[in-house]
Image (cartoon, rainbow over all chains, first blue to last red; front, top):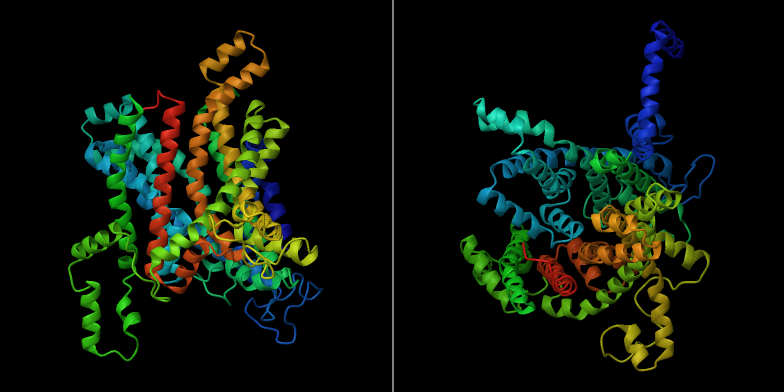
Length: 300
Length: 337
């Protein structure tokens, strides 16, 4: 019934507007097939996450005591795990953790990184020097290990995972924004804004920010992929989210021992889901970055 | 600038970095507000014993004094004792370094051997079929969780096909390890002509090395392509092409000019891959530094975690130094920033 209403709604709209939207979408898709494919994968997982309750055939934490470690069957499409829980339901529910961690973590990184990058780039001087040396110094620590160690030290809760990932990743955005601000700092529109008597904060946030933020936005999909990967790694090691919770990394951890005894489905499917979400985010980010790359624009 | 002055100036730049590294590893414990005293004293300790241990560890001092104490100890090579095993952390780390280095060098070496030619070839025809396929594969390589890849490989090559050993350790329990020379079973077995040990060590090594090679090839492909593209659009190469030089010579020119940035990237990547390698070690029970560190993290053995993080950072510093020296030698116009 709802379907009929939707069609009627579309029918009342002028036909020209609709084809224009479709054409525009096709044009964008042609411009960057990579970004489009990535976006479709992300949307697919977004759909799973939003409608998990309706899509899951079973309760993800309901243990069927009689059906432990059963291979894929009509009743359990992806089999059951060592507790007798339905793997398909758990994989679907797991997408919520992917987004639930990546989105806030990247937001935190943006909220810290962008102002720091703006300030360092615009003000320059000692502060800039010290910050950049500090960020350079942080590079000697492999990011996975630093994240693992800090989460382990602060305690393995969902909130800590998000905070630590967001904080550790903020230098990436600070760097990107800073380099854009450095390039824009001496441009005419900034000089004009200064001459017109704008206060510094206004120049930074109203005049520079919108022009310097593109790179950071394109970068955020790639960083979201990083956050999803690291949070799953944490759970795999048992440092992050703990076992019966249907998080992909934790599920792979549960299935690890069964891989060498032949019950492949417990660890295989959450791993595939994880790969595709990370792959989609990486593709989307990669495509965006290439669209923003001026050299490529010039070549086309 | 002569190599001597370059060397000296570069070494001086390392000093503040080292202080910073020691500070971060020191803060690693502080940031969590962990109290080692409770662990060391045990459940039956009295309040006085608690105080004694606090004083012994220097925890009753202000933070900057504690940092000075810690830094002083680190400078003397004292990384403390593991909370769990009570063994000196430094000994544990030194024992395992070669074991991990062996895996890391093979993995990244093979990854570079695959990644660099693929990246260069992709750059010669951007957006061609080869470029698109290699780009998708490299994005895929970026996205695979290493530990999962290791598990799937164990399932396929150990459980299904029976080609590989079960993935516990570096050598079969049935084979006695070769005499200790370097710490690498492969090299030691070769030097002592111990063929059964060599065969077993080799078969244990194949899967983890392939795993690491796949994961390390992905970023190498991506960056080599970007670097070669940049070189291809440089004035030198455009001039060479415009002059009608044969493709073979243009290719040589591109390779020569890409060498330095690619080398720098692969070096940086080695330091980043130490984390990935730790996960592979964890899955294959490799028994190296990575597995030691992850176990320490999982079990909350924080002196060991500190030592582990510190040694990884030192490893990065050393690799960066080596890269800079090599780059200076092959590209003398490089300057210190």
